[in-house]
Length: 74
Image (cartoon, rainbow, N blue to C red; front, top):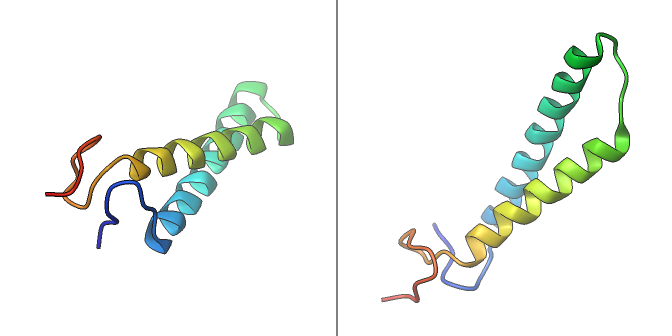
């Protein structure tokens, strides 16, 4: 179930966590391929995870339960 406008539920938090983890993994893979060796830039990984999770949660915060952004419940 989608959360109402200006609310976030546990489902949103779980999806935000999954998005943060997947984005971080893809960042590690990308930087590894670019560098040609297995090296971790933990600051980049953490920054990417944090910004992707915050962006997803902000999007959900301003989306109502019918999927409309910046519109109150009907």
